[in-house]
Length: 475
Image (cartoon, rainbow, N blue to C red; front, top):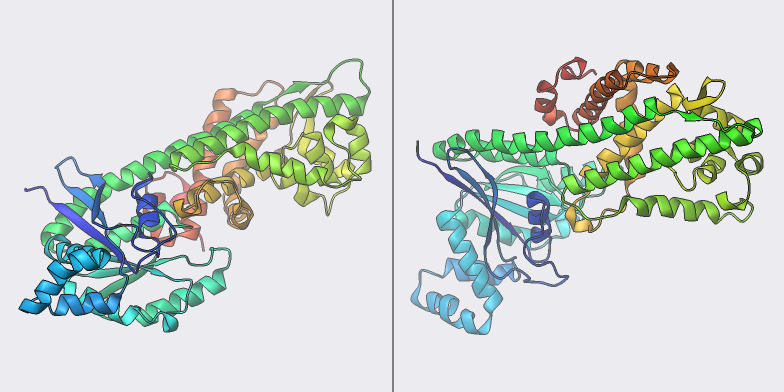
């Protein structure tokens, strides 16, 4: 067996986002991103994966198509003496970006295995006048082409997204295009990337497919390892949550004593969630600070002039004078998961206060089973928000987190039987921490797998690797 390089050539109209997508696929900053045309002037090659046998999956980031019509003309006339002179000599001096594009296209034709053609899917394909010319250039390459739809509406706007995807598939569903896939540098998931590589393998020659059979498991194993680390991080928060206990201070009035104890519980939970966010952000190769979102939530809550800040008096006063959700945000000094504020519209201050905690005995507080379930939803939401953050959006600041609460809630509800054994630990004065960690990891794995596979049915291979009921996707 001879090792083989599989070369994927990333091509698009200029300034559509090739380098941003390359950074997203590679999980690191490569190339230069500017809001101007022709930022990339030569092919840049990057390894996506290496197999133990020596195969390499290589991504080429190429110069963007600027004047597509002129580039097509140069390529079609390259066999004529005058055409060769204009393209290879004149353009090198007079129009370097056009000359670079010609060199990149010729190199792709000679050495590439498959073209990844990126389009700006936010525009109507009927008005993208350059598409026909660029498809002719792609046909000249005589290589299979997979179209990647970039800059689609977010997944939360499903109808609009589906309409655009359908329009682009209809517009580009002809040779040399073999497939049209959504893969966005602004919002993507690693399961989108897995689907892309599976599709790539379909259109290679026999040697290329054999190489991909060796490369794809390596690529998937790296992603599953990262997923396992995320599961462990989520499970750690859940295990700490169900085992955390706080004594009520003696000599304090009942409500004030409970408020102080609950604030100490909340402070520890706040630190755990911040650590989780930072872990997830680092796993995805992103930049950002989890604390920013918490600080923004606190600032927003304080903007209501009729609500005191935590430092402005006892928690009991805040609870008596504000709606349940906002009062708990105040009580927790800015710890806002979106759980408490959502409750504020339907629960009284006292009901919200009583909902999240329970008295394990007369002098000890812990979190309630209902709060464990709601926290599982919140942690799943945070995981989904981070893994969908494409590098083209810059630093992760949690702006899109609310759009992932619905699928997170659906996953937790579907895997309720995995959450229940974990939630039962809240009743013990001295819970079994080892058992709690075991239950937390099982629950976190099943919920996260469910959330991913429900959103990405083509990612069922992930469920197949996992033990337990999540292997079968329920209707």
